[in-house]
Amino acid sequence: MTKQIISILCLVLSSSAAAQVPSAASVEALLVANRTESALAATVAQMEQMIRQNLAQATAGRTLTDQQKSSIETAPQRLLATVKDDLSWDALKPVYVAAYQQTLTQTEVDLLIQLYKSPAGAVLLDRVPVALQKSGAVVQARMPAVIEKIRAMILREIAAAKSSTK
Image (cartoon, rainbow, N blue to C red):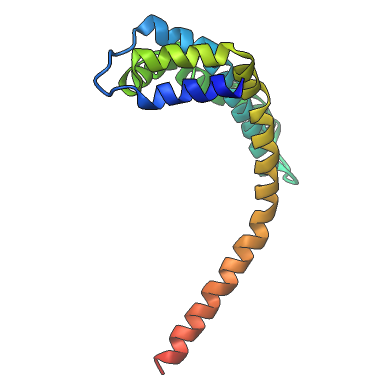
């Protein structure tokens, strides 16, 4: 299996830049194979959750009039309507197709379709995002300490610069 993945990747990386532009149909098949539409839907769902959380945080502890409460309750639907229109699959599919056609060759698209339809591709699509999410959570948890270290270093640098100019 590993040899298959390596050979596919080698072929992808070694293909000629002058190779044939992939057909729209083959790019669309690749977008299905790599689950682009469902990834986009997941992103929109995350945005919906963020919108709702931000509205809840912005109004937490505040006394609102009935009109304000009504407006806040309907705001997510209004905001999401815009997000869903602008980031719908129908709106973005041509953008994805064009980007892939400008970036990949027909051979590369064909090889990637093969990869995503293979057991290794299923692992890539199903399990690698989970691993990335877990590692991303660890990195995010470490960021406050890193930011504090950087802030302290900057303050020391500023103090050193001030003392050296006296």
